[in-house]
Image (cartoon, rainbow, N blue to C red; front, side, top):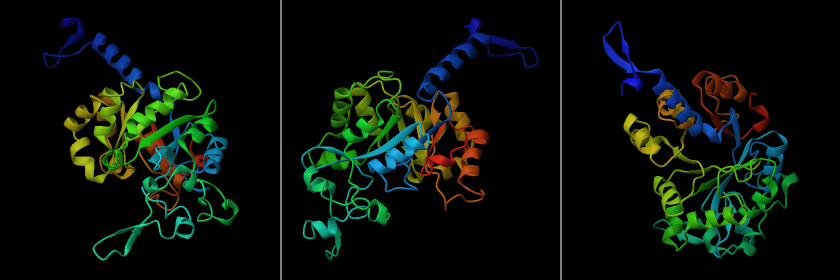
Length: 317
């Protein structure tokens, strides 16, 4: 052990030696291999300028210099992965007009109506207009499949899929993790470095989903544990970060959580975890002049490794 420790002459106690520090540096470098530089993840594509999770938003994000484009994943009735944030279709499509009677009545009085993705086949989902809600010029944009996102990104930009509500889909008989890895295998993207110009990082708010990907699916792709306000006590403590390190390569906390506790960045880095906060957008910049200034603070002052933004063109290089 002495070769990994040195005596601190002032205190008379052992401290980490140079060999220990070299090994720690190597471990950190390997852990952060998913980010060879400060990186930009286009949140749902360039969603500040185009309807989220459409090919139009993804194309614009690539044109604006994104390092990765994000895909929130849902599953259609016939088992196809599509890129959509919500479990339901009504917020970002005209499903109420096309399929007015295909809702599920919820709440005690039945007044809450929801059009769930899993209740529609891919062919039915493809009939929906996913652009008009954002702006007239996007009328006719469609919900993108995960395969379409892969085809668009290949050789140009990385992919950043999220297993969205995997437990909900599990209760309906779907295995989101298996579907995701099968799609990546079909495209030769299931291993780190398989296609250097199209790296893949997988994210989830579900620790169980990430563990399943690592164990049952055996993936070696980087896994990122997303952390919201309700999860901070469990996962942003010193013990929580150590637990996360057992199955994840990094954490993705809400940006406000790092504003409250900036020391989390250092603590995560000491464990070899990358830090990727979300979401940077105009209109929610707090004390900062604009979204570019806010991103610059998190990247340069707090030292995060990457971030999610709706505005890729504002990312400070």
